Length: 227
Image (cartoon, helix red, strand yellow):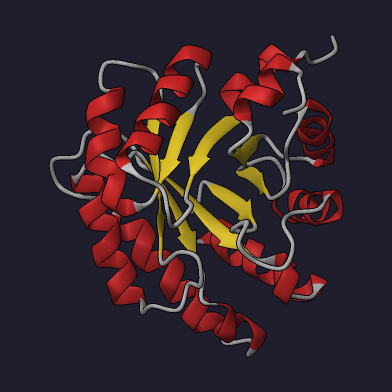
């Protein structure tokens, strides 16, 4: 059966990560997410308490980003940031990896970074499982590096590979998504980000192997209308 625009709602992380976002912008995104029943609203860490309050008693989750967008903070800093976000109500964590160690092929550092954040989600008193998504920035990496990082993320407890922050020179392509899906198989998710503005864009990413879409254009996708 063919996928219809409205079927996309549960695959969308409705996103507001712009540096100029205000509390009013976050409230608007949360209201839209509730109306269209998106999977989550993805906000910067400073807005997690607000989004948690606005989305309580709904099915919409609160997603946030760690070490975002450059990934250049230390694993210890990212672990603290993760614990703080979870304590504030975040249910999904999108981790921006440090690209330098990846390009240097320092795989032990990459493993330590992923494990630090995955472990930080396991906080005493938190009864719900926290979803961890590890961000790979394909604009800066070759195929072998993308495959290696995908394997490390999978082996060290990530629930998703997120393809691009959306802040690099380009976002995810169908080729990126397909490569990662073939590398990790079907045991973990793949989230595509970057210039996904309408239903056809989103459908292309699903065809390539994604099962989650990160976008600020969620309404256009689920209504089938261009903005």
